[in-house]
Image 1: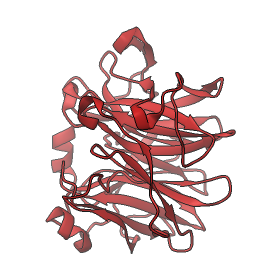
Image 2 (image 1 turned 45 degrees about the vertical axis):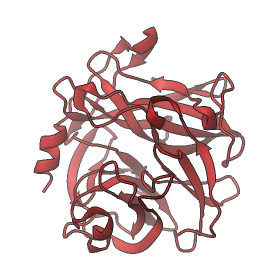
Image 3 (image 1 turned 180 degrees about the vertical axis):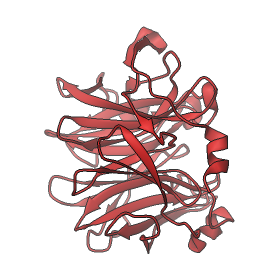
Image 4 (image 1 turned 30 degrees about the vertical axis):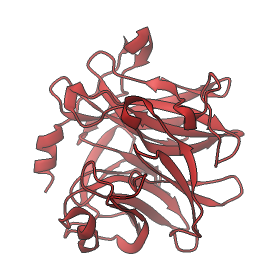
Length: 320
């Protein structure tokens, strides 16, 4: 069922290099990956058994597993029979499901995902849960947040963060009015209240900021985002940026002190060598380090899975 999606984005190869990128900065090549390594907008969680489960953008939202974080195997779709409830936003129960966010809480997997046509603001974020994570085992929970063509922000690219006090928040958004943060009820996984906080925005490059991910390390929260253009093969200009704050609600600032609400962001990775447009990353904590997971495009335009580790330099993440 993924053949059409793979024809669009291609397969993947792993490379391990240190190559000079834009502005002369050096970036590491992706760490070794093997097996079924095609992925777009990947998100990974470590399972209670110690293996790894990945979800990524595809018709029906696709899944992979790995026992060692290196060799990956396709294991079907979240929605093998489609998702009828998304058709008001997509026109097709199998197509236009984007940017999943995978986590594990309360003895089950939580999957937030977007339903939207490319470039549209008529969008919604939905939640599914599963106790096993297996294809076909997921239960539709409900709609979390939606936007219309008249909204000045977009309900796509969700990411769940549980703060140091145990409160649940969902970041999301792209372009237009930028990135938002809302409160989530941990009992239901759905939105709690109507408050909304703006956490990042750009005026440069047509407002191209999206794919927020908030992580916590030490006393800081880190807001990871992607700047510029995705989904144009080897011509993609996606790049991974980050800012930090002592509060999950911000304000987030980059290493120079510029607020992300004013277009700030410290560049973590950009195009280098045969790695084009790395972005739409996720971050999870493993036994050896925090792990950066992302997609990039090869010289032939195919999308590929990238995995690197993260260390912290005076409280700022550095990829290796």
